[in-house]
Length: 112
Length: 114
Image 1: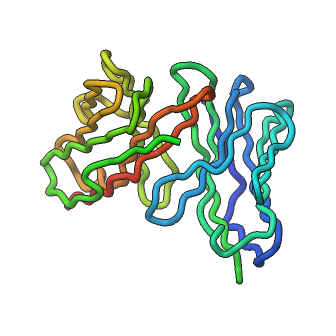
Image 2: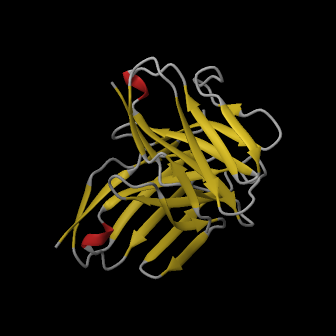
């Protein structure tokens, strides 16, 4: 059973702080890793993708991947109230028939 | 990113009826996917829709309940058949784009079955 686990939430941080979201996965051959943001009543929106070990930065967002330890994380610097949403971790195998396996998501609340 | 639209955006249906949800992508894509997201839950893949072949269903989902069509490379439909209140959910379609086959999602269809 391929699983994606996200640490339990909800997570609350003050405005301006760093929010750290973690995700572990069970399938060692997972190749592609994604973080989606989902606002209440909306569909998931891709915010970060990462495919190789290390860090990937995009604005205030940094994704970190460690394949040996089978975890992927998302850091949000200078958190803003607009970052308040549910964050979904997803993994997939590379290939034409890739399917996403999602974690349960973690709800982030940024306090003004 | 891909532009994906879905119709209807929401519907209220009576039990025992069927609803067909349409998904349109702004360019040709190989893979399209249908998900269900029940209230407060994460996304569960229903099936993968390939053009020119039958859809591939995940465990717990069957073609009789969720028939899928994929007539071309930009369009797919999902039918929720013989609905019951347990089918009340958000149904999302998605498509892969780009080198790494990143998935992008449509806006979803909110279904309430009474």
